Image (cartoon, rainbow, N blue to C red; front, side, top):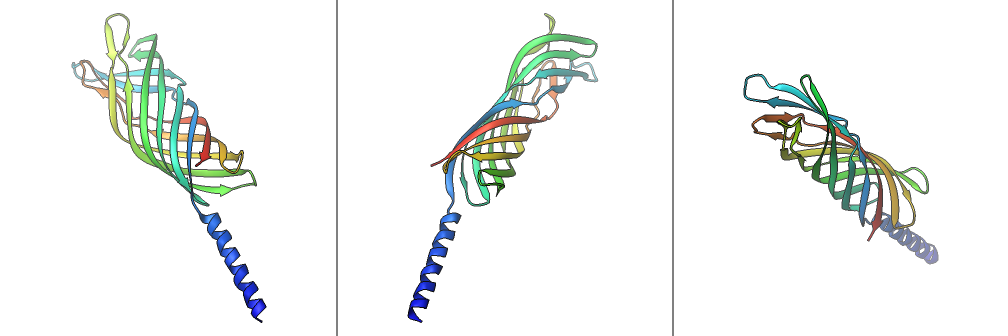
Length: 215
């Protein structure tokens, strides 16, 4: 009877130790890079004559990336993330006027993120979640022709949010690679002018490949 009790106590202690070890959170750092899916930004240009004129900036895909540090348990991840990306302007349109241009804007954001994670196979995990934070969008001085500097410079800082989902593959016990899609909402850039300009509040996607490592 004593031996049976000793065995049960030992087995219970081993099980508790195993569960505790599985539940222990780990810290990690990571980075990701790819492209955003920005295609255009509508704008309202006010020359001070009454009704603003509708304008549009057509965009090419720009680079997008981020750095993060976080903490992960069995099914939850929490992290702080810095994200940045480029806005590539390739054409401006204002009423009947349209012209190819070359200009580069930029956005930056800081997020507090939370994710739900689930193991799909021995090597593959899924994650889905989002974050809230602060962001800034800045666009350069852009114009049509030699005399109409109608677009910008414009910038804005304020509240930002994002949603994200992806799959990660374990390279080793401490490192992973991930493919993810992010949906961001950033502040609406504007400028008092003259001329005054107000861009739309833009929501857009980004596809990135990431790497993370425990420490």
